[in-house]
Image (cartoon, rainbow, N blue to C red; front, side, top):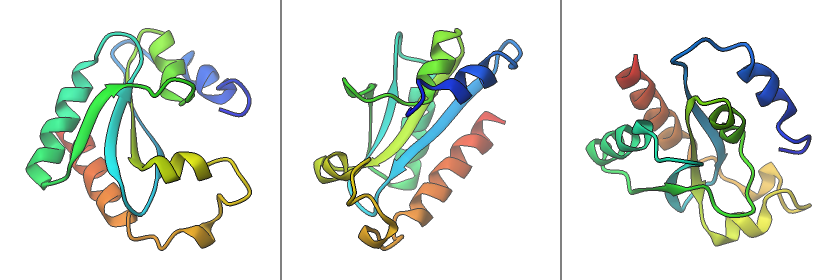
Length: 126
């Protein structure tokens, strides 16, 4: 995000047709899971909702929060189906990319759910 998505944009140029992108960005210890997209709602959003529901996790799907830039935008811009998975709260948004955004502000309790959700989603897509 810091360099205009330069890395994601370069990577998007190398992908073949039909690639689907699941970007994981910002996983806090608590808060609601978000499945965000730009442009038209991709089928990946419904798949993520179904996987989360089966796992008993609360997940909201919708457009990327205005003013937030995520790597999935670079892939969507190239026509790929792309989502960004994130977990947090308003306090998370207030902290990210500030001096308070350090590992000391986290316990790591969100890692297990993140790993399980992303693994289940990618297994379903495979």
